[in-house]
Picture 1 (cartoon, rainbow, N blue to C red):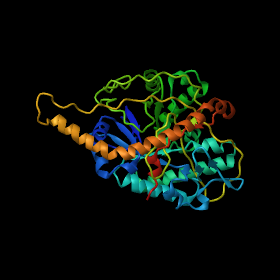
Picture 2 (cartoon, rainbow, N blue to C red; picture 1 turned 30 degrees about the vertical axis):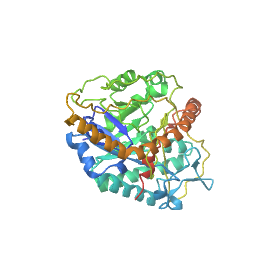
Picture 3 (cartoon, helix red, strand yellow; picture 1 turned 180 degrees about the horizontal axis):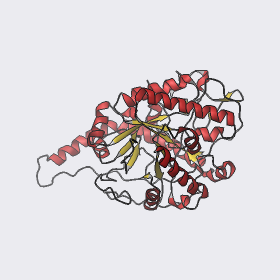
Picture 4 (tube, helix red, strand yellow; picture 1 turned 90 degrees about the vertical axis):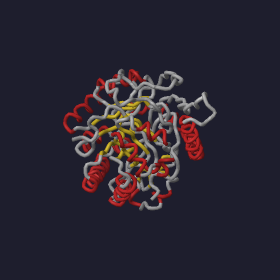
Amino acid sequence: MNPLDGVKNYQVYYGHPTAAILKDMQNYDLVIIEPLHYTKAQVEQIKARGTKVLGYISVMEVATWNTGLMSKLQSGDFFTRNGQRVHYSEWDSYLTNIASPHFQGLLLTEIQNQVVAKGIDGVFMDTVGDIDNEHLNNPTVLKQQRDGLVNFLKQARARYGDIAMVQNWGFDTLETSTAPYVDGIMWESFNADTIKSDAWSQNMIKKLQAVDAKHSVKTLTISTRLSADSHKLAKDSGFIHFHEADAYVNWNAGLVTRTQDTAPAPVAVAPTTKPAETTTTKPAETTTTKPAETTTTKPAETTTTKPATTTATKPAATTTTKPVTETATKPVTKPVSAPKADASTDKPTESKQKEKADWKQEKKDKKEKKKAKKHAKKYAKKHAGKHSSSNDHHAAKGNMCGKVKHKTAGFLNFFKF
């Protein structure tokens, strides 16, 4: 049985939780979070009404600011090409070698400490798509990295049993290698205006449906524009959809109610400013959502992106070009208003007391959120530049997935032991 069976809606949120957010998370069938920000008690609160929880982890890239993880890496944990580590200057991160037993061990330890120990139901593995992006033109290295990922997944299954495992992008790797070991795959930039007119995307929908029929692998999709149309297209394809409105660092309150199982699309309860529809180049096959692992709160970004892997034995040198990604403008949502005080009396009412408590909680988190927003602005420009070249990548690489990264300070904290 697939642990994602029955999931009809979900949300990705990499920011810090508040009392209001923890309560609202109970309205979703599934939430994907940065586990470093949560205690075991908070995870239990989210799951009180049956919500499933996945914890973020990056498997194919490590950022230099992630000093906790960087200090534990050995030379064989980095992927090297022509004797040099593969460095993404725009993210200041390095491609890792998932074939390295030592690196696999570090990731397994993170799953134990941040996922299993906190009662989280499974892992969301970002940057898996880097395998297809970086190694498709070198069959020997491609097989080595895919075999390394499969070995890692087998070990995770052996140690942690039936935890849910979802990979981000890496469609070719899913079809050839990981389908028997994962429960789901995420497809970001699933925007109806481009998906409907893109031959690669239409073919991929059929492939993912076939993989689901054979191996029970659910597809989670994310759109950044045309929410209703994208939701309908995903539903008609048998996929589970979420419309990303805020780069994963702001919680979208009140978007779903669990009893509304047949709702055609999430409906906002509080009035919000309708995001402007944007036209963008067709989404290049990408690998994506990622938050980088580290020691800070995740920066929001106006586009989407992602991370990477390594090998104990030095992989053969290749000369593939660096992956690119598509960019989509992300709408900004209004914060939900605090509860209003009862005007009929001077005495603090229950509503007013709750408002005061929420205000104190928000004040407590203010510093960290401010820092997260600062990081978000820093990376937004980078995401836009990376996504803008997605069309060229699509033409040059064919079925290779482009990479969409999502960096937040929270991700930076992920590997802090």
